[in-house]
Length: 394
Image (cartoon, rainbow, N blue to C red):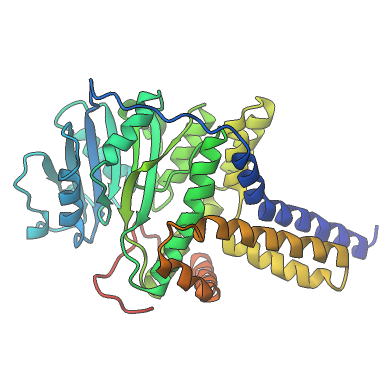
């Protein structure tokens, strides 16, 4: 077999893989559209769950006071807030008079989400039934815990809430929000309704305390990606992660290009580090005929959007000179994907600013490539994105 034939087969194999990922969202949507939706639970308030709310701050505390205030204003009473101020100095921003709030200053720099979580758990005032993980720049909707409790009442031990944009002050923030809308729809609502699990988003998520401890007590995760490890372990162990779309957390979107590049470089590096979990979970799903593991394994193996979209375009151009049929299939798959992306993003509930910002998607993709380069050539590893109180870029 000569090199030309081998190259031809490699081209076709890449084309099949890319086209599969391009049409997969539409397949999910069509299956979801014509399937029977699961019934929603009715919240029982007879025994409200006791929550330990862990709010992590690393170096930056600008948003902590607002985050704590939103948690204290929730329509729920049975909780205690633990602010883990990692590598932070005591300041007025970390002074609270409410006895439901405790600020913890680790003796040594932790620089790890899981280390911060376990530090808080070690200092719990009482044995909480569940933990709610929040970022320091999040704001809680008043009904956040009530929304999470609906799924605990159904028997779930891991629940991901809906992260909605807190700020839409720049074009980049709007495009970041559009990306979140897409992922929440397909990787949250749809795959959960179809019998799989919602992917974890890093915050706005709640777990049975003992389950969380059992999942991560034997592993030290440095830098970003604890949610990737956690979700993989949960699904592999047979757990299912619920998606609570009425448990809303307002999340600070990246407003400037520098923030975006820093954040995405970590996310891209995290995907390359942890996507391998998808192979074993997909295999388990096939062997056990487990729809939860099967769908989730496919989702974990999917590259970041800008990578496989860019590969699709490059492969389509190459195929114009080698296989016009393959080029046509990729082109049609790209059209299907664009439609899939626009279905949730152009929803009537989407803010007009987000829809107007879609014309700047090429700029957003450019910054993703800058992030890819940074993740490849930079040896620095951060655990959090530094959000600015001022906008320095559109």
